[in-house]
Length: 406
Image 1 (cartoon, rainbow, N blue to C red):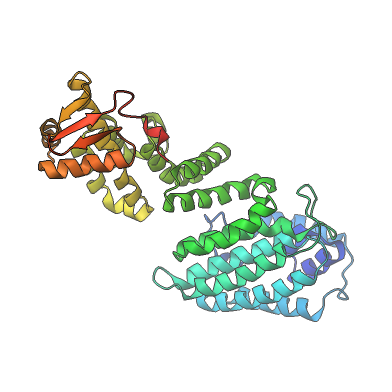
Image 2: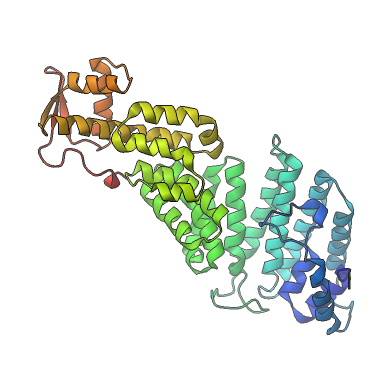
């Protein structure tokens, strides 16, 4: 059969059997409103799969008794959605669908409608982004309101949560929380409202949803939480979260997105990624930066940062990479220390000369300022003798491993 079963037929069959998969097909977006490459949105089934859908619903007797007025309203809106070609109009219709479905979901038994709620939530945010384009944020703000309502309908379910329960008419709606939280986290990052992320973390962690949900959602959650830790300068926790993502993600494009933040945080903490890894994921823009940090070549580091500044700004890692300059300074000054036969006292003029070799002009006061920052950040153990213009280093491990930096 060349056509998909009617939404009414699918809905009737899904309601009779409490079939979670069939119900999701009722709320799929039409092909004209989604990008074929967009894996975050449920793609309409390939025409070759229509026969399977017809076979599935043909085994169930058609009945309109279960289609209440609310379901009829939802069908009318989904029908209108399939006819529109405007993203703005589509989003307005989708908001009505989302509002109605939130109410229907709340009054339903068990959690068998959770997969459909996820489809509705993803569709709402997708259409909001399309309607806004690259300039506006208005529709994304409206989408967040609908998503927050969906979050409340799932997290406040009083049925005891068991992560191993299948979708049924008796299981807890809390099984749907993490996927909705992930969409909200994505929205908050897009809207630059990171302070709102904290409101989601406590409920999730209270019920251990970030540990007991499916691996795909756990990876997405750790990706955004890792990025959140980066903004809070909690680099140790950020690295843990992003390492978890990298270890449990198989899609090369997603791995590249993870590495976009994992490479800078590892660089900042003194863990230098291999050239092989960077080449594998087409991240050659980091190579000169890493080389500059490794040998303390400030000139190479600064040139690499400047030449790729537009790219790093677009990726949102420029400021993070800029902080790696402290590590480049530290490694340069360690080389000065080694050249001085590891003397515990190094004249500031020697450090000034080393900076000059890297094309960095700095008077002695500026040298002191750089060293004071490194000492404060625990990159160097020692103190400054202003009167003698001398860096006095600890005799025990004066340049501690950068991995200890928190």
